[in-house]
Image: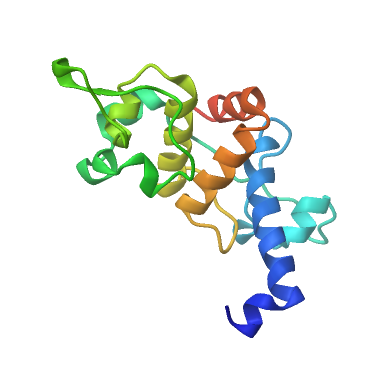
Length: 168
């Protein structure tokens, strides 16, 4: 680890990135602006609600898991769960009619599956990956998905509901 990564500023930046990402999804019903990049405000200003510039609105228009099944690219669908998420999927997935258990399902397996938790997290990831959710500076779609997953492990119903509220 470099000296910069060990500095208090790096820790503070990591905290702000994580906090702003969590605020992004968990405050959805309350706020329409997520990332500071689209506005004149700062991440900490958006987090505290104390921005010195005029408030701006960011359009959030997510896509549901059922729609992602038909519009996601082959590359996106062939991505395995573990390439995006930190823990194992909650659902049980089997390959075709032969009933062989899939230990690391693809996003397509999950979107075609029945587990709501897994399907919603995949939709959140694909929405972030494809620009439907504006992300704070320094946050990519995988980081966002892992933060979503971590938060859903504590507040599952809130996170899943917030994701659903973004679908148009």
